[in-house]
Image (cartoon, rainbow, N blue to C red; front, side, top):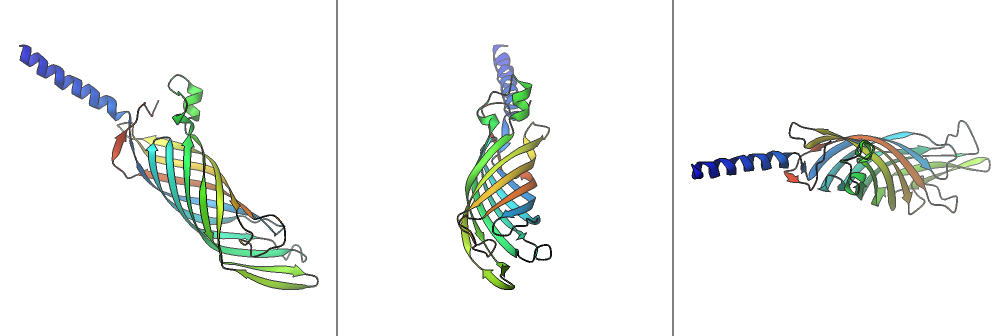
Length: 228
């Protein structure tokens, strides 16, 4: 009887522990894709919205501390000579590589006792370093004539990003799909993404993005419950 009780107790305890751990599990690797709207604030007076595509790989130290590596291909453009003959116009078919750290509020807040904190736990801030390979051409007004310029360069930039992850959970309460809505400002450490060097300030480009990430790694455990 005692032996049967001990065996039953151990089996029950193991089952309860396993069930509890399922609520704390998450994947340490995510593969993502995103679409982005780009706007440049540089030496062209008229801004244009252009598009790019993004592929990312995320290493999740925790569900709320992430290290994200992005590869992006797209276009940056600005200016409009048809609207203003004394303006400038450029187009840049670029590629960019970015590595950044991302901190979500859930890592530093107790969201188990507050509906408001729970709603904001997936809000994040992120920054790091990026490199953009420019393939840019421009037409600049110079008096009554125009001058064409070209830029094939690589420049570093600092991304500053704010966003929100909408996490979807499977039957075991593991976050397996994440929709990522974000706004990012990129401070370029140079002045060539628009192929124009007409001012004292470096170029800036902003990005509004919507993406989706899929858990692809082996699940591991977290110290507190992820889903409420």
